[in-house]
Image 1 (cartoon, one colour):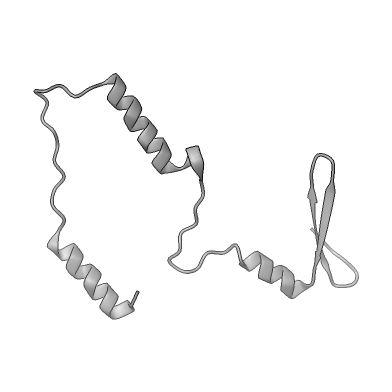
Image 2 (cartoon, rainbow, N blue to C red):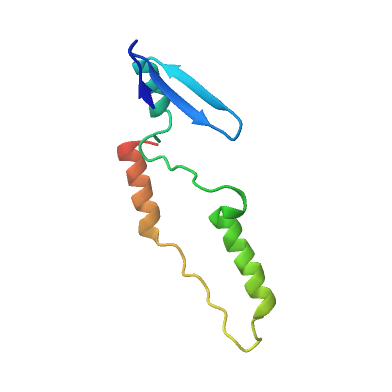
Length: 99
């Protein structure tokens, strides 16, 4: 990144066989930069494909099921039911703060 004499900001991207320079005016640079900042309560996606947590988790579950099957005499853990207060809290949150 460089600041030029004509008040332009230059960003240079270097590749194996090329150099690409983009020039921005200061407000344009801030607009490009701020487009990468997530909104409030918004989550960014960090990994795609095989690096995503869901993919790794499902792969681990498949591997675990192949190597260590459940025995018939082992008890299977059941998940507890959802709390009534959780739904009440969510509905109050929506009424107070909206979507």
